[in-house]
Length: 118
Image (tube, rainbow, N blue to C red; front, top):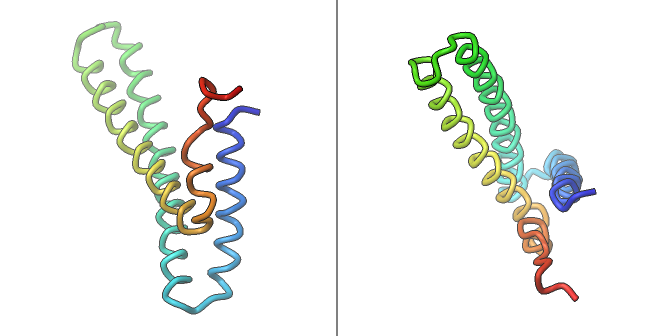
């Protein structure tokens, strides 16, 4: 299991805990967590939708057989959009992780430094 996989599993466990907790709470803190969970889900869906657009643009570019034509420009623009969506998703995941487990935030967002590990 990779560091990223472990990080994602912990994040999803915290996500589930946050969702259950915020449903039971009616406080401003609970409402903020609910907003963070909703933003996290929206960011994930937007990123996955953008991934589909990248694949479509790639397929059109390959079919066009013009390495630097307009199809390539569209594909390149879609890649940029997907990268922005991925960053938004990452940022949302980090905010959610910090809100649901502030004492674990350092461990969740930063993979261990393997160069200094003995």
